[in-house]
Length: 297
Length: 308
Image (tube, rainbow over all chains, first blue to last red; front, top):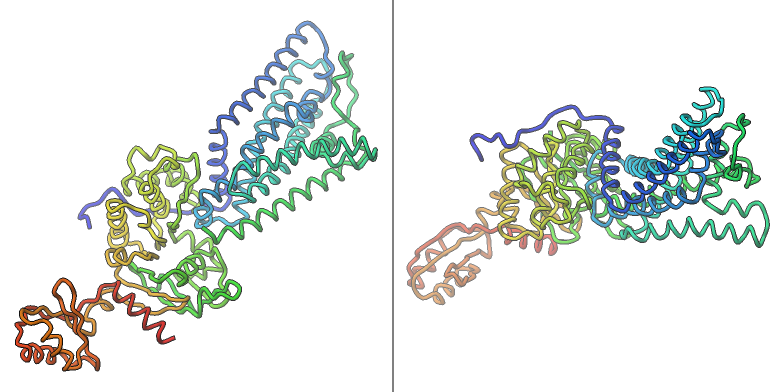
Protein backbone atom coordinates (compact mmCIF):
# COMPACT_ATOMS: atom_id res chain seq x y z
CA UNK A 1 0.00 0.00 0.00
CA UNK A 2 1.32 3.40 -0.93
CA UNK A 3 2.22 5.84 1.85
CA UNK A 4 1.05 8.79 -0.19
CA UNK A 5 -1.36 8.31 -3.08
CA UNK A 6 -2.90 11.26 -4.81
CA UNK A 7 -3.77 9.38 -7.98
CA UNK A 8 -7.00 8.05 -6.58
CA UNK A 9 -9.19 9.81 -4.09
CA UNK A 10 -12.54 8.53 -2.88
CA UNK A 11 -15.54 10.31 -4.33
CA UNK A 12 -18.53 11.40 -2.36
CA UNK A 13 -21.20 13.67 -3.66
CA UNK A 14 -24.91 13.99 -4.22
CA UNK A 15 -26.40 11.67 -6.78
CA UNK A 16 -28.75 13.09 -9.37
CA UNK A 17 -32.37 12.01 -9.99
CA UNK A 18 -33.46 9.50 -12.61
CA UNK A 19 -34.37 12.02 -15.31
CA UNK A 20 -30.78 13.27 -15.28
CA UNK A 21 -29.49 9.72 -15.62
CA UNK A 22 -31.80 9.10 -18.58
CA UNK A 23 -30.76 12.47 -20.03
CA UNK A 24 -27.10 11.45 -19.87
CA UNK A 25 -27.92 8.20 -21.63
CA UNK A 26 -29.74 10.11 -24.37
CA UNK A 27 -26.89 12.58 -24.88
CA UNK A 28 -24.29 9.85 -25.22
CA UNK A 29 -26.64 7.90 -27.52
CA UNK A 30 -27.27 10.87 -29.83
CA UNK A 31 -23.58 11.67 -30.05
CA UNK A 32 -22.97 8.06 -30.99
CA UNK A 33 -25.77 8.10 -33.60
CA UNK A 34 -24.32 11.16 -35.31
CA UNK A 35 -20.91 9.50 -35.45
CA UNK A 36 -22.13 7.13 -38.19
CA UNK A 37 -20.94 8.13 -41.67
CA UNK A 38 -24.07 6.93 -43.46
CA UNK A 39 -26.34 8.87 -41.12
CA UNK A 40 -24.25 12.01 -41.66
CA UNK A 41 -24.43 11.66 -45.44
CA UNK A 42 -28.20 11.13 -45.38
CA UNK A 43 -28.86 14.10 -43.15
CA UNK A 44 -26.48 16.31 -45.07
CA UNK A 45 -28.13 15.47 -48.39
CA UNK A 46 -31.57 16.19 -46.88
CA UNK A 47 -30.43 19.58 -45.59
CA UNK A 48 -28.89 20.35 -48.97
CA UNK A 49 -32.21 19.52 -50.59
CA UNK A 50 -34.10 21.71 -48.12
CA UNK A 51 -31.69 24.61 -48.50
CA UNK A 52 -31.87 24.20 -52.27
CA UNK A 53 -35.66 24.40 -52.13
CA UNK A 54 -35.47 27.46 -49.90
CA UNK A 55 -33.03 29.07 -52.32
CA UNK A 56 -35.32 28.44 -55.32
CA UNK A 57 -38.34 29.76 -53.45
CA UNK A 58 -36.39 32.83 -52.40
CA UNK A 59 -35.44 33.55 -55.99
CA UNK A 60 -39.08 33.05 -57.04
CA UNK A 61 -40.25 35.46 -54.38
CA UNK A 62 -37.77 38.13 -55.47
CA UNK A 63 -39.46 38.02 -58.88
CA UNK A 64 -42.84 38.57 -57.20
CA UNK A 65 -43.88 35.01 -58.06
CA UNK A 66 -46.26 33.51 -55.57
CA UNK A 67 -45.81 29.75 -55.56
CA UNK A 68 -48.60 27.59 -54.17
CA UNK A 69 -46.33 25.58 -52.00
CA UNK A 70 -45.23 28.66 -50.05
CA UNK A 71 -48.83 29.57 -49.35
CA UNK A 72 -50.75 28.49 -46.28
CA UNK A 73 -48.92 25.78 -44.41
CA UNK A 74 -48.15 23.75 -47.48
CA UNK A 75 -44.41 23.74 -47.64
CA UNK A 76 -43.69 21.84 -44.41
CA UNK A 77 -46.84 19.77 -44.73
CA UNK A 78 -45.60 18.71 -48.12
CA UNK A 79 -42.13 18.01 -46.76
CA UNK A 80 -43.32 15.96 -43.80
CA UNK A 81 -46.01 14.15 -45.76
CA UNK A 82 -43.85 13.15 -48.71
CA UNK A 83 -42.52 9.65 -49.25
CA UNK A 84 -39.46 11.21 -50.84
CA UNK A 85 -37.38 12.58 -49.28
CA UNK A 86 -38.88 12.41 -45.78
CA UNK A 87 -40.42 8.93 -45.78
CA UNK A 88 -37.35 7.29 -47.29
CA UNK A 89 -34.99 9.33 -45.13
CA UNK A 90 -36.72 8.46 -41.88
CA UNK A 91 -37.06 4.85 -42.87
CA UNK A 92 -33.32 4.64 -43.58
CA UNK A 93 -32.26 6.55 -40.47
CA UNK A 94 -34.54 4.39 -38.31
CA UNK A 95 -33.06 1.27 -39.88
CA UNK A 96 -29.53 2.54 -39.26
CA UNK A 97 -29.84 3.96 -35.77
CA UNK A 98 -32.97 2.37 -34.28
CA UNK A 99 -32.14 -1.06 -35.63
CA UNK A 100 -28.77 -1.26 -33.97
CA UNK A 101 -29.72 0.54 -30.79
CA UNK A 102 -30.58 -2.43 -28.58
CA UNK A 103 -29.10 -5.10 -30.86
CA UNK A 104 -25.59 -3.73 -30.31
CA UNK A 105 -26.12 -3.52 -26.55
CA UNK A 106 -27.07 -7.19 -26.60
CA UNK A 107 -24.27 -8.20 -28.92
CA UNK A 108 -21.54 -6.42 -27.00
CA UNK A 109 -23.12 -7.12 -23.63
CA UNK A 110 -23.57 -3.45 -22.74
CA UNK A 111 -26.87 -4.37 -21.08
CA UNK A 112 -24.93 -5.79 -18.13
CA UNK A 113 -23.33 -2.37 -17.66
CA UNK A 114 -26.64 -0.51 -17.97
CA UNK A 115 -28.54 -2.74 -15.59
CA UNK A 116 -25.82 -2.80 -12.97
CA UNK A 117 -26.31 0.96 -12.67
CA UNK A 118 -29.18 2.86 -11.12
CA UNK A 119 -31.62 2.56 -14.01
CA UNK A 120 -34.64 0.37 -14.53
CA UNK A 121 -35.84 -1.37 -17.67
CA UNK A 122 -38.34 1.42 -18.19
CA UNK A 123 -35.58 4.05 -17.86
CA UNK A 124 -33.55 2.14 -20.41
CA UNK A 125 -36.49 1.99 -22.80
CA UNK A 126 -37.31 5.67 -22.35
CA UNK A 127 -33.66 6.59 -22.86
CA UNK A 128 -33.37 4.55 -26.04
CA UNK A 129 -36.70 5.84 -27.36
CA UNK A 130 -35.71 9.42 -26.69
CA UNK A 131 -32.32 8.85 -28.34
CA UNK A 132 -33.72 7.38 -31.55
CA UNK A 133 -36.60 9.88 -31.64
CA UNK A 134 -34.31 12.87 -31.12
CA UNK A 135 -32.06 11.64 -33.86
CA UNK A 136 -34.96 11.08 -36.27
CA UNK A 137 -36.33 14.53 -35.44
CA UNK A 138 -33.19 15.97 -36.98
CA UNK A 139 -34.53 14.58 -40.26
CA UNK A 140 -38.11 15.79 -39.79
CA UNK A 141 -38.49 18.62 -37.30
CA UNK A 142 -35.31 20.52 -38.10
CA UNK A 143 -35.88 20.73 -41.90
CA UNK A 144 -39.58 21.49 -41.26
CA UNK A 145 -38.56 24.34 -38.94
CA UNK A 146 -36.23 25.70 -41.61
CA UNK A 147 -39.10 25.58 -44.08
CA UNK A 148 -41.42 27.27 -41.58
CA UNK A 149 -38.91 30.12 -41.23
CA UNK A 150 -38.63 30.25 -45.02
CA UNK A 151 -42.41 30.35 -45.39
CA UNK A 152 -42.61 33.18 -42.87
CA UNK A 153 -39.89 35.09 -44.66
CA UNK A 154 -41.03 34.80 -48.25
CA UNK A 155 -44.73 33.95 -48.28
CA UNK A 156 -47.00 36.79 -49.30
CA UNK A 157 -49.90 35.36 -47.34
CA UNK A 158 -51.46 37.62 -44.74
CA UNK A 159 -51.88 35.56 -41.59
CA UNK A 160 -51.81 36.32 -37.91
CA UNK A 161 -48.92 35.53 -35.55
CA UNK A 162 -51.28 33.11 -33.77
CA UNK A 163 -51.76 31.13 -36.97
CA UNK A 164 -48.03 30.99 -37.50
CA UNK A 165 -47.58 29.75 -33.93
CA UNK A 166 -50.27 27.13 -34.55
CA UNK A 167 -48.38 26.04 -37.65
CA UNK A 168 -45.24 25.72 -35.58
CA UNK A 169 -47.04 23.52 -33.07
CA UNK A 170 -48.63 21.52 -35.86
CA UNK A 171 -45.38 20.78 -37.65
CA UNK A 172 -43.80 19.82 -34.32
CA UNK A 173 -46.73 17.49 -33.65
CA UNK A 174 -46.57 16.12 -37.20
CA UNK A 175 -42.86 15.37 -36.77
CA UNK A 176 -43.54 13.58 -33.49
CA UNK A 177 -46.39 11.60 -35.07
CA UNK A 178 -43.96 10.38 -37.72
CA UNK A 179 -41.02 9.74 -35.42
CA UNK A 180 -42.34 8.33 -32.14
CA UNK A 181 -44.09 5.18 -33.43
CA UNK A 182 -41.25 4.45 -35.84
CA UNK A 183 -38.63 4.82 -33.09
CA UNK A 184 -40.46 2.47 -30.73
CA UNK A 185 -41.18 -0.08 -33.45
CA UNK A 186 -37.53 0.00 -34.53
CA UNK A 187 -36.49 -0.60 -30.90
CA UNK A 188 -38.84 -3.58 -30.68
CA UNK A 189 -37.25 -5.06 -33.78
CA UNK A 190 -33.81 -4.20 -32.42
CA UNK A 191 -34.47 -6.20 -29.25
CA UNK A 192 -35.13 -9.28 -31.39
CA UNK A 193 -31.59 -9.88 -32.52
CA UNK A 194 -27.94 -9.37 -31.61
CA UNK A 195 -27.22 -8.67 -35.25
CA UNK A 196 -27.89 -5.01 -36.08
CA UNK A 197 -28.68 -5.75 -39.74
CA UNK A 198 -31.66 -7.97 -39.01
CA UNK A 199 -33.81 -5.27 -37.32
CA UNK A 200 -32.86 -2.77 -40.01
CA UNK A 201 -33.93 -5.09 -42.80
CA UNK A 202 -37.14 -6.05 -40.95
CA UNK A 203 -38.03 -2.38 -40.53
CA UNK A 204 -37.43 -1.56 -44.20
CA UNK A 205 -39.58 -4.56 -45.13
CA UNK A 206 -42.32 -3.35 -42.78
CA UNK A 207 -42.29 0.18 -44.17
CA UNK A 208 -42.14 -0.69 -47.87
CA UNK A 209 -44.25 -3.79 -47.40
CA UNK A 210 -47.07 -1.81 -45.81
CA UNK A 211 -47.07 0.70 -48.68
CA UNK A 212 -46.98 -2.01 -51.35
CA UNK A 213 -49.62 -4.19 -49.69
CA UNK A 214 -51.83 -1.16 -49.14
CA UNK A 215 -51.47 -0.20 -52.81
CA UNK A 216 -52.29 -3.69 -54.03
CA UNK A 217 -55.28 -4.03 -51.68
CA UNK A 218 -56.61 -0.61 -52.64
CA UNK A 219 -56.49 -1.61 -56.30
CA UNK A 220 -57.94 -5.09 -55.85
CA UNK A 221 -60.37 -4.76 -52.97
CA UNK A 222 -61.20 -1.10 -53.47
CA UNK A 223 -62.21 -0.59 -49.86
CA UNK A 224 -61.30 2.42 -47.73
CA UNK A 225 -59.70 0.36 -44.97
CA UNK A 226 -56.98 -0.77 -47.40
CA UNK A 227 -55.32 2.62 -47.01
CA UNK A 228 -54.95 2.00 -43.30
CA UNK A 229 -52.46 -0.77 -44.04
CA UNK A 230 -49.81 1.73 -45.16
CA UNK A 231 -47.63 3.08 -42.35
CA UNK A 232 -46.96 6.20 -44.37
CA UNK A 233 -50.68 6.85 -44.93
CA UNK A 234 -51.40 6.53 -41.23
CA UNK A 235 -48.70 9.01 -40.21
CA UNK A 236 -49.67 11.44 -42.98
CA UNK A 237 -53.39 11.31 -42.16
CA UNK A 238 -52.74 11.90 -38.49
CA UNK A 239 -50.22 14.66 -39.22
CA UNK A 240 -52.61 16.44 -41.59
CA UNK A 241 -55.23 16.57 -38.85
CA UNK A 242 -52.97 18.79 -36.79
CA UNK A 243 -52.84 21.70 -39.21
CA UNK A 244 -55.13 24.66 -39.19
CA UNK A 245 -57.41 24.73 -42.21
CA UNK A 246 -57.50 28.20 -43.67
CA UNK A 247 -58.25 29.95 -46.89
CA UNK A 248 -55.18 31.14 -48.74
CA UNK A 249 -55.60 34.82 -49.44
CA UNK A 250 -53.14 35.14 -52.28
CA UNK A 251 -53.36 34.05 -55.85
CA UNK A 252 -51.03 31.10 -56.02
CA UNK A 253 -49.43 29.47 -58.99
CA UNK A 254 -48.78 25.78 -59.32
CA UNK A 255 -51.65 24.55 -57.21
CA UNK A 256 -50.92 20.97 -58.28
CA UNK A 257 -48.20 20.96 -55.62
CA UNK A 258 -50.78 20.90 -52.85
CA UNK A 259 -50.08 18.00 -50.46
CA UNK A 260 -52.29 14.96 -50.18
CA UNK A 261 -55.30 15.60 -48.03
CA UNK A 262 -58.48 13.73 -47.53
CA UNK A 263 -57.08 10.60 -49.14
CA UNK A 264 -58.25 8.58 -46.20
CA UNK A 265 -61.90 8.86 -45.26
CA UNK A 266 -61.34 7.87 -41.64
CA UNK A 267 -61.28 10.40 -38.80
CA UNK A 268 -57.92 11.24 -37.19
CA UNK A 269 -58.43 8.97 -34.20
CA UNK A 270 -58.41 5.83 -36.32
CA UNK A 271 -54.77 6.22 -37.49
CA UNK A 272 -53.97 7.59 -34.01
CA UNK A 273 -55.32 4.42 -32.41
CA UNK A 274 -53.43 2.19 -34.84
CA UNK A 275 -50.11 4.01 -34.46
CA UNK A 276 -50.63 4.33 -30.70
CA UNK A 277 -51.39 0.62 -30.49
CA UNK A 278 -48.26 -0.27 -32.46
CA UNK A 279 -46.19 1.98 -30.18
CA UNK A 280 -47.66 0.52 -27.01
CA UNK A 281 -47.29 -3.09 -28.11
CA UNK A 282 -43.72 -2.38 -29.23
CA UNK A 283 -42.89 -0.81 -25.85
CA UNK A 284 -44.33 -3.78 -23.97
CA UNK A 285 -42.42 -6.12 -26.22
CA UNK A 286 -39.12 -4.34 -25.55
CA UNK A 287 -39.77 -4.42 -21.79
CA UNK A 288 -40.53 -8.12 -21.99
CA UNK A 289 -37.37 -8.78 -23.99
CA UNK A 290 -35.24 -6.70 -21.64
CA UNK A 291 -36.61 -8.59 -18.66
CA UNK A 292 -35.24 -11.69 -20.29
CA UNK A 293 -31.86 -10.12 -21.03
CA UNK A 294 -31.47 -8.13 -17.81
CA UNK A 295 -30.32 -11.10 -15.78
CA UNK A 296 -28.20 -12.53 -18.54
CA UNK A 297 -24.71 -11.80 -19.67
CA UNK B 1 -23.46 -3.08 9.47
CA UNK B 2 -22.85 -6.19 7.40
CA UNK B 3 -21.95 -5.73 3.78
CA UNK B 4 -24.14 -8.57 2.72
CA UNK B 5 -26.76 -10.70 4.37
CA UNK B 6 -28.95 -13.38 2.92
CA UNK B 7 -31.62 -15.21 4.76
CA UNK B 8 -32.91 -18.56 3.45
CA UNK B 9 -32.36 -17.27 -0.06
CA UNK B 10 -33.57 -19.60 -2.79
CA UNK B 11 -33.78 -19.32 -6.52
CA UNK B 12 -35.31 -21.89 -8.83
CA UNK B 13 -35.25 -22.00 -12.61
CA UNK B 14 -38.08 -24.43 -13.23
CA UNK B 15 -36.99 -27.66 -11.59
CA UNK B 16 -33.39 -26.56 -11.19
CA UNK B 17 -32.50 -25.07 -7.82
CA UNK B 18 -29.76 -22.50 -8.39
CA UNK B 19 -29.77 -21.37 -4.75
CA UNK B 20 -31.08 -23.42 -1.88
CA UNK B 21 -31.90 -21.88 1.43
CA UNK B 22 -28.70 -19.82 1.44
CA UNK B 23 -28.10 -17.99 4.68
CA UNK B 24 -24.93 -15.98 4.56
CA UNK B 25 -23.42 -13.00 6.31
CA UNK B 26 -20.43 -11.16 4.94
CA UNK B 27 -19.15 -8.57 7.38
CA UNK B 28 -16.80 -6.94 4.88
CA UNK B 29 -13.25 -6.90 3.59
CA UNK B 30 -12.06 -8.82 0.57
CA UNK B 31 -14.05 -12.01 0.11
CA UNK B 32 -13.58 -14.74 -2.44
CA UNK B 33 -16.75 -16.40 -3.64
CA UNK B 34 -15.73 -19.88 -4.71
CA UNK B 35 -17.59 -22.76 -6.19
CA UNK B 36 -17.66 -25.05 -9.20
CA UNK B 37 -19.84 -24.31 -12.21
CA UNK B 38 -23.48 -24.29 -11.21
CA UNK B 39 -22.69 -23.51 -7.58
CA UNK B 40 -24.94 -20.45 -7.71
CA UNK B 41 -22.31 -17.71 -7.52
CA UNK B 42 -23.55 -15.76 -10.53
CA UNK B 43 -27.16 -16.21 -9.46
CA UNK B 44 -26.29 -14.78 -6.05
CA UNK B 45 -24.59 -11.75 -7.64
CA UNK B 46 -27.56 -11.14 -9.95
CA UNK B 47 -29.96 -11.31 -7.03
CA UNK B 48 -27.78 -8.87 -5.07
CA UNK B 49 -27.88 -6.42 -7.98
CA UNK B 50 -31.64 -6.85 -8.30
CA UNK B 51 -31.31 -8.23 -11.81
CA UNK B 52 -33.34 -11.33 -11.02
CA UNK B 53 -35.84 -11.91 -8.21
CA UNK B 54 -35.30 -14.57 -5.60
CA UNK B 55 -37.87 -17.36 -5.42
CA UNK B 56 -37.83 -17.26 -1.62
CA UNK B 57 -35.92 -15.67 1.21
CA UNK B 58 -34.34 -12.26 1.37
CA UNK B 59 -31.06 -10.55 0.63
CA UNK B 60 -29.75 -7.23 1.84
CA UNK B 61 -26.71 -5.17 0.92
CA UNK B 62 -25.67 -2.67 3.60
CA UNK B 63 -28.99 -3.37 5.25
CA UNK B 64 -30.97 -2.43 2.14
CA UNK B 65 -33.36 -5.07 0.84
CA UNK B 66 -32.28 -5.78 -2.73
CA UNK B 67 -35.84 -6.08 -4.02
CA UNK B 68 -37.24 -2.93 -2.46
CA UNK B 69 -34.19 -0.71 -2.82
CA UNK B 70 -32.74 -2.07 -6.02
CA UNK B 71 -31.52 1.25 -7.39
CA UNK B 72 -30.16 2.41 -4.04
CA UNK B 73 -28.22 -0.83 -3.74
CA UNK B 74 -26.78 -0.40 -7.23
CA UNK B 75 -25.64 3.11 -6.33
CA UNK B 76 -23.53 1.63 -3.56
CA UNK B 77 -22.22 -1.28 -5.53
CA UNK B 78 -19.77 -1.48 -8.43
CA UNK B 79 -20.13 -4.48 -10.70
CA UNK B 80 -17.57 -5.83 -13.11
CA UNK B 81 -19.23 -8.43 -15.35
CA UNK B 82 -17.42 -11.52 -16.50
CA UNK B 83 -18.03 -11.14 -20.20
CA UNK B 84 -16.75 -8.46 -22.51
CA UNK B 85 -18.93 -5.41 -22.16
CA UNK B 86 -18.68 -2.23 -24.20
CA UNK B 87 -20.63 0.03 -26.51
CA UNK B 88 -19.23 0.01 -30.04
CA UNK B 89 -18.05 3.41 -31.16
CA UNK B 90 -17.54 4.71 -27.64
CA UNK B 91 -14.06 5.26 -26.27
CA UNK B 92 -13.14 4.37 -22.69
CA UNK B 93 -13.66 7.95 -21.51
CA UNK B 94 -17.25 8.11 -22.78
CA UNK B 95 -17.99 4.62 -21.55
CA UNK B 96 -16.77 5.17 -18.01
CA UNK B 97 -18.34 8.65 -17.97
CA UNK B 98 -21.68 7.13 -19.01
CA UNK B 99 -21.35 4.54 -16.24
CA UNK B 100 -20.83 7.36 -13.72
CA UNK B 101 -23.78 9.35 -15.05
CA UNK B 102 -26.05 6.28 -14.95
CA UNK B 103 -25.24 5.92 -11.27
CA UNK B 104 -26.31 9.54 -10.85
CA UNK B 105 -23.03 11.45 -10.70
CA UNK B 106 -23.17 15.06 -11.90
CA UNK B 107 -21.53 15.81 -15.26
CA UNK B 108 -18.31 17.46 -14.00
CA UNK B 109 -17.76 14.93 -11.22
CA UNK B 110 -18.35 12.04 -13.61
CA UNK B 111 -15.83 13.40 -16.11
CA UNK B 112 -13.20 14.11 -13.44
CA UNK B 113 -13.65 10.72 -11.87
CA UNK B 114 -13.50 9.06 -15.28
CA UNK B 115 -9.99 10.38 -15.85
CA UNK B 116 -8.93 9.62 -12.28
CA UNK B 117 -10.02 5.98 -12.45
CA UNK B 118 -8.67 5.49 -15.96
CA UNK B 119 -5.32 6.81 -14.76
CA UNK B 120 -5.57 4.59 -11.73
CA UNK B 121 -6.13 1.42 -13.77
CA UNK B 122 -3.24 2.38 -16.01
CA UNK B 123 -5.01 3.31 -19.23
CA UNK B 124 -3.05 6.10 -20.88
CA UNK B 125 -3.80 7.82 -24.17
CA UNK B 126 -5.55 4.66 -25.37
CA UNK B 127 -8.57 5.89 -23.46
CA UNK B 128 -9.55 7.99 -26.48
CA UNK B 129 -9.59 5.04 -28.85
CA UNK B 130 -12.83 3.16 -29.62
CA UNK B 131 -13.14 0.27 -27.21
CA UNK B 132 -13.70 -2.36 -29.89
CA UNK B 133 -10.00 -1.96 -30.78
CA UNK B 134 -8.80 -2.73 -27.24
CA UNK B 135 -6.98 -5.86 -26.13
CA UNK B 136 -8.64 -8.14 -23.58
CA UNK B 137 -6.48 -6.69 -20.82
CA UNK B 138 -7.48 -3.12 -21.68
CA UNK B 139 -11.14 -4.06 -21.82
CA UNK B 140 -10.85 -5.66 -18.38
CA UNK B 141 -9.27 -2.46 -17.06
CA UNK B 142 -12.11 -0.37 -18.48
CA UNK B 143 -14.68 -2.72 -16.94
CA UNK B 144 -12.89 -2.34 -13.63
CA UNK B 145 -12.77 1.44 -14.05
CA UNK B 146 -16.51 1.72 -14.77
CA UNK B 147 -17.20 -0.36 -11.67
CA UNK B 148 -15.24 1.97 -9.36
CA UNK B 149 -16.02 5.30 -11.04
CA UNK B 150 -18.42 6.32 -8.26
CA UNK B 151 -16.20 4.89 -5.49
CA UNK B 152 -18.69 2.19 -4.47
CA UNK B 153 -18.83 0.80 -0.99
CA UNK B 154 -18.90 -2.73 -2.39
CA UNK B 155 -17.25 -4.02 -5.53
CA UNK B 156 -18.56 -7.22 -7.12
CA UNK B 157 -16.05 -8.78 -9.48
CA UNK B 158 -17.09 -11.68 -11.68
CA UNK B 159 -14.03 -13.58 -12.92
CA UNK B 160 -11.89 -10.44 -13.07
CA UNK B 161 -8.78 -12.15 -14.45
CA UNK B 162 -10.41 -14.41 -16.97
CA UNK B 163 -8.63 -14.37 -20.34
CA UNK B 164 -5.72 -12.25 -19.14
CA UNK B 165 -2.06 -12.97 -19.83
CA UNK B 166 0.21 -13.34 -16.75
CA UNK B 167 1.31 -9.70 -16.73
CA UNK B 168 -2.19 -8.30 -17.16
CA UNK B 169 -3.40 -10.73 -14.50
CA UNK B 170 -0.79 -9.50 -12.04
CA UNK B 171 -1.81 -5.90 -12.76
CA UNK B 172 -5.46 -6.72 -12.20
CA UNK B 173 -4.72 -8.55 -8.96
CA UNK B 174 -2.65 -5.58 -7.83
CA UNK B 175 -5.58 -3.26 -8.48
CA UNK B 176 -7.98 -5.52 -6.61
CA UNK B 177 -5.60 -5.77 -3.65
CA UNK B 178 -5.16 -2.01 -3.57
CA UNK B 179 -8.86 -1.27 -3.84
CA UNK B 180 -9.69 -3.79 -1.12
CA UNK B 181 -6.91 -2.95 1.29
CA UNK B 182 -5.99 0.62 0.43
CA UNK B 183 -9.13 2.34 -0.76
CA UNK B 184 -11.63 1.13 1.77
CA UNK B 185 -13.87 -0.66 -0.70
CA UNK B 186 -15.32 -4.03 0.25
CA UNK B 187 -14.69 -6.55 -2.50
CA UNK B 188 -16.41 -9.81 -3.40
CA UNK B 189 -14.64 -11.80 -6.11
CA UNK B 190 -16.42 -14.63 -7.82
CA UNK B 191 -13.83 -16.77 -9.55
CA UNK B 192 -12.69 -20.23 -10.44
CA UNK B 193 -9.04 -19.24 -10.19
CA UNK B 194 -8.17 -20.09 -6.61
CA UNK B 195 -4.69 -18.49 -6.55
CA UNK B 196 -6.40 -15.17 -7.40
CA UNK B 197 -8.47 -15.47 -4.26
CA UNK B 198 -5.42 -16.40 -2.21
CA UNK B 199 -3.59 -13.40 -3.61
CA UNK B 200 -6.30 -10.84 -2.93
CA UNK B 201 -8.81 -12.00 -0.34
CA UNK B 202 -8.91 -12.32 3.40
CA UNK B 203 -12.04 -14.43 3.61
CA UNK B 204 -13.61 -17.06 1.49
CA UNK B 205 -17.15 -18.28 0.91
CA UNK B 206 -17.37 -21.69 -0.70
CA UNK B 207 -20.62 -22.63 -2.38
CA UNK B 208 -21.76 -25.83 -4.00
CA UNK B 209 -25.09 -26.68 -5.62
CA UNK B 210 -26.59 -23.44 -4.47
CA UNK B 211 -25.74 -23.93 -0.82
CA UNK B 212 -23.10 -22.56 1.50
CA UNK B 213 -20.41 -25.15 2.18
CA UNK B 214 -17.81 -23.24 4.13
CA UNK B 215 -17.04 -19.70 5.12
CA UNK B 216 -14.21 -18.11 7.01
CA UNK B 217 -10.80 -16.47 6.87
CA UNK B 218 -8.49 -18.07 4.32
CA UNK B 219 -5.65 -18.26 6.85
CA UNK B 220 -7.85 -19.93 9.42
CA UNK B 221 -9.23 -22.41 6.93
CA UNK B 222 -6.04 -23.29 5.14
CA UNK B 223 -3.47 -23.07 7.95
CA UNK B 224 -3.06 -25.77 10.52
CA UNK B 225 -4.53 -28.63 8.58
CA UNK B 226 -5.01 -32.01 10.20
CA UNK B 227 -1.54 -33.30 9.49
CA UNK B 228 2.17 -32.60 9.12
CA UNK B 229 4.66 -32.08 6.33
CA UNK B 230 7.85 -34.04 6.95
CA UNK B 231 11.22 -34.21 5.20
CA UNK B 232 13.65 -36.97 6.07
CA UNK B 233 17.09 -38.25 5.20
CA UNK B 234 17.30 -42.03 4.96
CA UNK B 235 15.18 -44.96 3.88
CA UNK B 236 11.95 -43.41 2.75
CA UNK B 237 10.05 -46.67 2.25
CA UNK B 238 10.95 -47.88 5.73
CA UNK B 239 9.71 -44.59 7.17
CA UNK B 240 6.44 -44.86 5.25
CA UNK B 241 5.94 -48.42 6.55
CA UNK B 242 6.65 -47.28 10.08
CA UNK B 243 4.14 -44.46 9.77
CA UNK B 244 1.56 -46.93 8.54
CA UNK B 245 2.18 -49.07 11.58
CA UNK B 246 1.40 -46.04 13.77
CA UNK B 247 -1.99 -45.57 12.05
CA UNK B 248 -0.78 -42.66 9.99
CA UNK B 249 -1.73 -41.97 6.38
CA UNK B 250 1.38 -40.91 4.51
CA UNK B 251 1.55 -39.37 1.10
CA UNK B 252 4.96 -38.98 -0.54
CA UNK B 253 5.37 -36.02 -2.90
CA UNK B 254 7.85 -35.67 -5.72
CA UNK B 255 9.58 -32.74 -4.05
CA UNK B 256 10.63 -35.04 -1.21
CA UNK B 257 7.94 -33.89 1.16
CA UNK B 258 5.83 -36.47 2.98
CA UNK B 259 2.39 -35.41 4.11
CA UNK B 260 1.30 -37.29 7.19
CA UNK B 261 -2.28 -37.46 8.35
CA UNK B 262 -3.78 -39.42 11.17
CA UNK B 263 -6.54 -41.93 10.77
CA UNK B 264 -7.91 -41.25 14.24
CA UNK B 265 -7.75 -37.73 15.59
CA UNK B 266 -4.61 -35.64 15.84
CA UNK B 267 -2.29 -37.19 18.42
CA UNK B 268 0.49 -34.66 17.79
CA UNK B 269 3.97 -35.37 16.52
CA UNK B 270 4.56 -38.47 18.65
CA UNK B 271 3.77 -41.14 16.00
CA UNK B 272 6.01 -39.37 13.49
CA UNK B 273 8.93 -39.18 15.89
CA UNK B 274 8.52 -42.83 16.85
CA UNK B 275 8.32 -43.87 13.19
CA UNK B 276 11.50 -41.98 12.39
CA UNK B 277 13.29 -43.71 15.23
CA UNK B 278 12.00 -47.11 14.19
CA UNK B 279 12.89 -46.56 10.51
CA UNK B 280 16.25 -45.10 11.49
CA UNK B 281 15.84 -42.00 9.38
CA UNK B 282 16.90 -38.49 10.14
CA UNK B 283 14.11 -36.01 10.53
CA UNK B 284 15.12 -32.86 8.62
CA UNK B 285 11.93 -30.87 8.61
CA UNK B 286 8.60 -31.07 10.42
CA UNK B 287 5.72 -28.60 10.35
CA UNK B 288 1.94 -28.54 10.56
CA UNK B 289 0.75 -28.94 7.02
CA UNK B 290 -0.56 -25.80 5.38
CA UNK B 291 -3.21 -26.78 2.90
CA UNK B 292 -3.41 -24.57 -0.15
CA UNK B 293 -6.77 -23.06 -0.94
CA UNK B 294 -6.99 -25.46 -3.83
CA UNK B 295 -6.58 -28.46 -1.52
CA UNK B 296 -9.00 -26.95 0.94
CA UNK B 297 -11.51 -26.27 -1.81
CA UNK B 298 -11.22 -29.84 -3.07
CA UNK B 299 -11.56 -31.41 0.36
CA UNK B 300 -14.44 -29.15 1.39
CA UNK B 301 -16.32 -29.97 -1.79
CA UNK B 302 -15.75 -33.69 -1.50
CA UNK B 303 -16.81 -33.62 2.18
CA UNK B 304 -19.92 -31.69 1.20
CA UNK B 305 -20.82 -34.08 -1.57
CA UNK B 306 -20.11 -37.19 0.47
CA UNK B 307 -22.19 -35.83 3.29
CA UNK B 308 -25.12 -34.97 1.06
